[in-house]
Amino acid sequence: MANEYDIVVIGAGTGGYPTAIRAAQLGLRVAVVERQKALGGTCLIWGCIPTKALLEHAHALKIAQGAKEWGLGIDGASVRIDMNQVQARKDKVVTTLTKGVEFLFRKNKIDWIKGTARLLGKGQVEVTGEKPVTLTATKEIVIATGSQPRSVPGVEIDRKRIITSDEAIALKEVPKSIAVLGAGAVGVEF
Image (tube, rainbow, N blue to C red):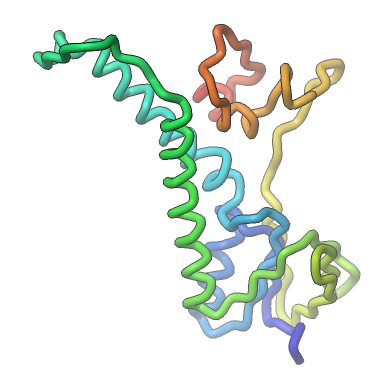
């Protein structure tokens, strides 16, 4: 049956995609339902990986600004950061890694079903999106939907003045000031 799989994984983040790949390597027929335009989830697209790329730029800037202390001679204009170039490099790093996950899906014959999943009942997953479909999982359904930023009551996220880490990771200029709510891993990095 075309839409019948041993395992259907909902979510292609750091919980979902390794599960799917390993199941396929063990010989199971696997489908992954993911609504984002790329595979990899928060960590790969908006979190761990892109923040580390930005931290590398901040580190390079700090080293360049203290070049004399490191015994480096830099002549000419003052050291500055080009956020367009920073964002372009970050995006390239993210794209390389998400394309790597896509490659592993193809290599292991995993079907990526683009859309939003909804459990219908035992072994049934409805997918809405460009091509609505109902999938049947004969063995297991794995729910690996991850997380997303949430608002604080009374502080509405408008994605312009009040932003989440998703928008912060794509800033085109360094803000003059910023207040960060939250002291978890993501909050501390920003």
